[in-house]
Length: 103
Image (cartoon, rainbow, N blue to C red; front, side, top):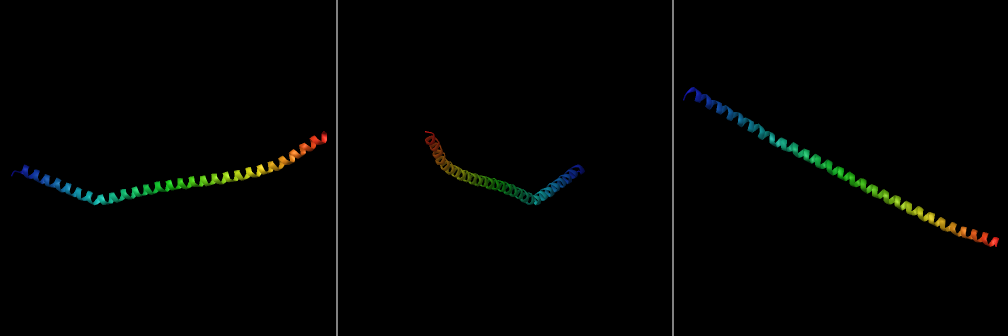
């Protein structure tokens, strides 16, 4: 073999050794990268779930507050209606007294 062929063989061996070393490094890094990506996905899913839970709680609180306000309004309406009925009786009596008193 001449020197040129020997040099080519040595160069090919050197490149194959570099490729092998690179493949080994990448193989060692893959589990770490996979773990990091998995942790990122878990964190994202957890954050999304927490936000969704927060929204559900906020909606539930808003609904509860709305129902509470509605109950208060109904109660006040009943009170006002009762007062109006009581005053109506007094008003009718007053008008009748005034009409009869003038007649």
